[in-house]
Length: 473
Image (cartoon, rainbow, N blue to C red; front, side, top):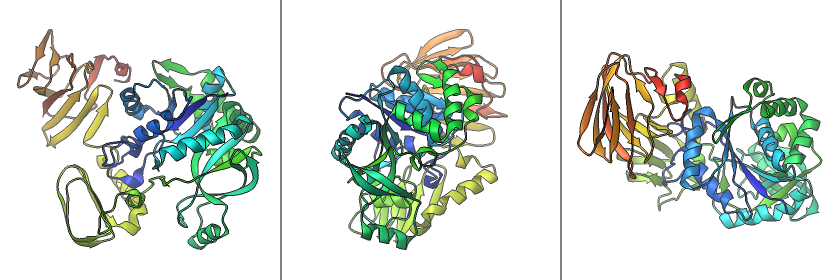
């Protein structure tokens, strides 16, 4: 019996969920307000499958440590393939199929996005296991979500003849429809939302890609053949990969192949492509509001309120969305939720950092959060994971003062290395080599005060780094 290897695609940027989701910290890795991430729940979903092998994760260089951290939490090892640049799902899955085929080309790949919400784990597992029979026969099985409304934000799949194993031949794919067309399809029956979830043999995908999108197949084959490996991270050869056309599996393969099958899946599902989608899948109070965090409402109906750092108070509002983060607040009518991307584009045009970065920034060793920033000083809260350490580094333009809040810090300051504990501190002059390590078993928390003429993150000269980043300095 063929094994299943999940392939989790983490390439999205989620700009329509700004200000929570940003380019350097996209929605699949962000706590959306329930203490969990979409990537984490996707991992839990696939790891619940019987006879499943460790997943392959495909993401970009900037997000590799987010993925690694979620895998580490679950004690799961994984190959993390780093795309030099996003080329959509067809090339990403080609790289994954090459990786799987080296071990056994008949192994089944369960390809799924990392940023979708699905509420019924049992139905998901049952659907995948039922579709396994069709996939073992060499079919590319796509999962169609049984629609609950005439949604216009999703593509549709029409079922054809019965194939067995609970699947149907794919009659056709339908682009995101107008409202009346969506109503007509639901009235007719046999149409499903296109989930972007696939189960298929690695061999079949590569054969179909070679037949219908040879340029993608050839570029990805060369990129995989000349890959480099850095621990858990695998980097396809950049020049070959970037020579691949940019295309989705739907256009490159599914609209042409004769192997396509659809498995209906009756679950509550959303691609969480906008704040309106988050409202729809949220838990509603008696007034139809979805409130996350410290929210106080008075005569408010059918609103989405997400407070991350402070009290949000709302009075006499209806059908609005409010999203608060430390450095930005979004207020808009729910019906305009899809237009948030225009705000992100405006921030980018004006060179504002809020489109790209959060005050909270994750690093391979932990995280830091900017608490205050003025012209010549900056205050950060730094958290270093147990056993982790920062690079040996120095700064040309700033001095730093570290105060330990909790945990134990091993500090290298010039030629001296010593331990600091709670309420102890050290001062690091401009131009001094220094390093911070957490030798303990609990997180190290400290406050860093920077002062100087320039406080940018690019004022770092790395001399040694366990994560290999001195090569990037």
